Image (cartoon, rainbow, N blue to C red; front, side, top):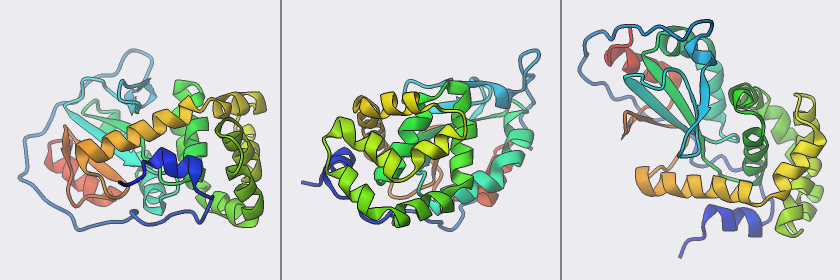
Length: 248
């Protein structure tokens, strides 16, 4: 029987940050649909400023009744996820989410201990900080990888501790505590978050549920209106697909 992601995170050594399962495939075009009308945002806000946590453990940005609902399964240690975050950042908000036509829900898909530790800290922050922190982590991915490579011995030692001590120690070993403190998350908040193993368990459960329901094999994977967008793993193809669906 294959071990669950949480058993791998809790029982295995730190190892190398995984890049497997992170890639792009060819695009898949569908028939062009009628243009969808724009939907006005609540007074004094834009739709991209409207963020909520979802029952499935994700964070959704945009009109909750948007006719096009995107769910992105993303891994913090996936280079293609980082590229998508950078390339889509302004355009997806301005041309798709702020029109009220599209909502974007992000669900963390955990692949390794660095991924789990950073994702847990982000999810322990206030809801309105989720997207800015996630975007900042993606933009700083090379720095995070360098911290892993430069502190492998400390990371391995942290992985040998009991679960409630393991992830706070891992955050210190990999300098994630410093990274997030410089972005407004206090050391006490980080320690309290990572000492609660349930926060890691929830990430594991969400990852397992995604694999079971959508047969996800790599990140980023996009589910649009309940269906996996086969062959779409980058901003350009997704943008074209949204336009084809009427968000233009």
